[in-house]
Image (cartoon, rainbow, N blue to C red):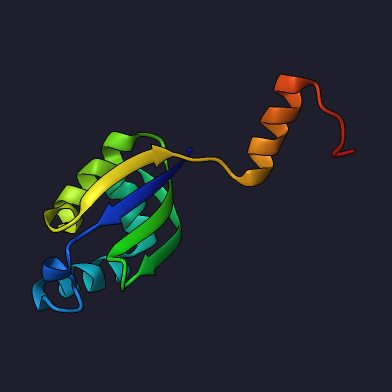
Amino acid sequence: MLYGIYGRHTPETCPIQVPEYAQVFVDIFEIDPERLAGTYGIRRIEAQYHSALEHTFLWIVDADRPHDIERFAVDTGLASFNALRIVPVHTFAETVEGLRKRHGLGGGE
């Protein structure tokens, strides 16, 4: 299942300003994906987008349980300076297919 990790921090805790928090991002970036999956039940990180000036980010991960993502965020330090929301997400194509089924809409042949 896909989950979005929505994160936000303050300018005062921004990794651009705080080397300790910058190191958290570097360490996460360098994690071996196979180890990540084995340790936290996260199959893969699909995408990672950041807006430096907004102090926000969105990561898309494939995992079975949001609690596994929470444990990853705490253990890696990601949750130490970011407010996080972990939300189930779907692709646009999955959303459209669900709408077609729900409302009996055509198309997509």
